[in-house]
Amino acid sequence: MSRSGFYAWLKRPVSDRARRDARLRRQIEEHFEQSYGVYGSPRIHALLRQQGERTGRKRVARLMRELSLKARANRIYKNLPGAVTCRLGIPNEARERIVSAPDQVWRGDIT
Image 1 (cartoon, rainbow, N blue to C red):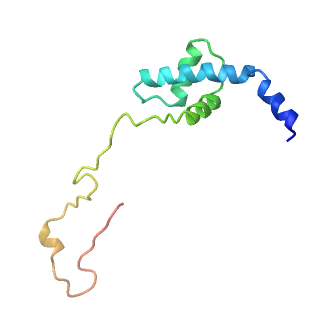
Image 2 (image 1 turned 90 degrees about the vertical axis):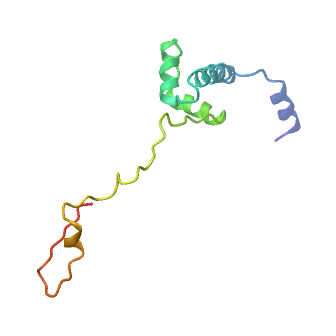
């Protein structure tokens, strides 16, 4: 890059796109804070559209990435004990049976 080109770039005014991005960043941060960090780019994009802003969803997603705004899950899912285990309808005696020959005990599992 030439020296004169660099200084010409420094003196150049801010572009319309950069000004609009700055305005959108402020609005995105405002909506993100109002939602307590729950809303992601699709919902914030919908809010901006309701306000009359004409912008794309991917642009909102890019600006949120640049601002390091990431939506958090609204619910926290916990593994409950016994929720995943398979309940078989056979008593414990059948499980502990000693098998002396083939085809005496059959068992299936659907997982």
